[in-house]
Image 1: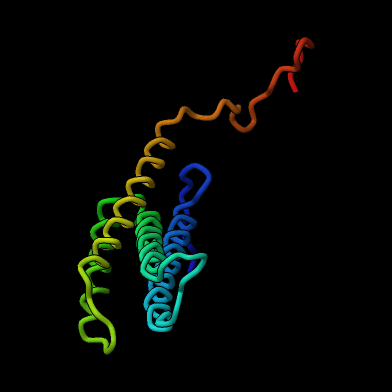
Image 2 (image 1 turned 90 degrees about the horizontal axis):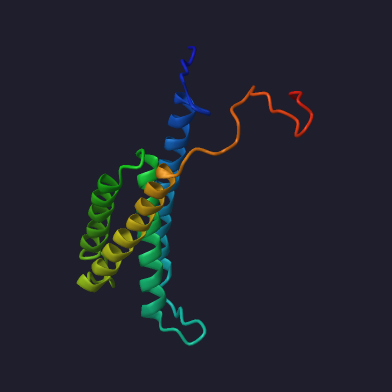
Length: 155
């Protein structure tokens, strides 16, 4: 079966779909690792005098924030939808802890997850907005002949 491709700039539609699928796979893998890692990190995590709670909090802040950012990238820079899906996943994580032995669900954990999601997605949105408003590169288009300086001839 032949794959139809349309060129949008430098990336074909098929290439965009492949990249989005890859980003979704990375996102799903990251979330799975986060859940699996939570089960095995019941020991002491203190490093350089930092408390276990601080390290776990930063891991959740960064983990859920990066999950949301990768998700936003995978679904075509739809930051609000990525925020909503990530918040549902963060809520699901806390709810599932209600039925897992030796785990507890804590509103503080959910708040840390929500802050990570919101902070990193806002930073990603601002960066994306800045990148999309930058003027096009001053580099000439492909096939454009450049004049040699002072020679009057073109390359």
